Length: 34
Image 1 (cartoon, rainbow, N blue to C red):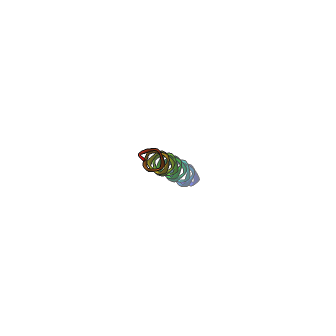
Image 2 (image 1 turned 90 degrees about the horizontal axis):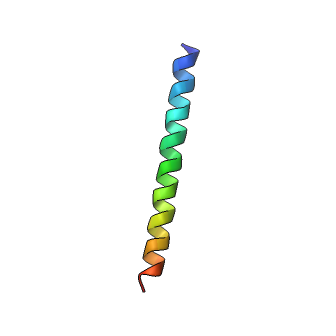
């Protein structure tokens, strides 16, 4: 079951990375609107 734990870890990592990219893009977008 260690494999499942590793998979969930990678899924959480991917979700966190995607969230960070979206957040950064949103910040840049808001900063460039004016």
